[in-house]
Length: 188
Image (cartoon, rainbow, N blue to C red; front, side):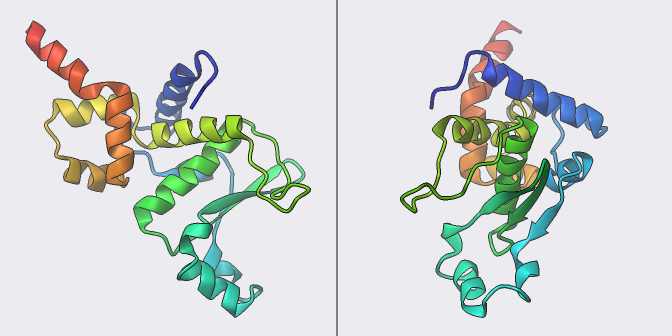
């Protein structure tokens, strides 16, 4: 993953800024549904399309094809709407929503879902940015440090921050939380 210079700091700044705007401490859990409401981005669960979606398609995305669709941003002019697969585990839904919110926060433009060959239209740069900012919103740098400083177990942290173990470990690692806390304690 190659991110533009300064992007990781920018992501950390967004995580702090939105917590502050929502009246949260820098280490507090951030609810992506509250952030979406704050940003005036409607979020619609896929199940709400049951009346207009073919039953077999809904069954597919709810069952064996669940991994095929996580969430997507739908545009109407400059307005955004996020549709997410509410059949996923709640922690996965939070990560999916944070990823889509990251696209909105960063002002990523709409693009057709498929290219001229019928393949998924995929812009590696904007996906990498959303893949970094989404988790940073859920586990801020301060949250990563707080988890380690307080001796919170990984199991407890996944409950408190409503994230998967993989996302938690990734954020603890990229923030260098354990190393930084150990270094700070060694100086005391």
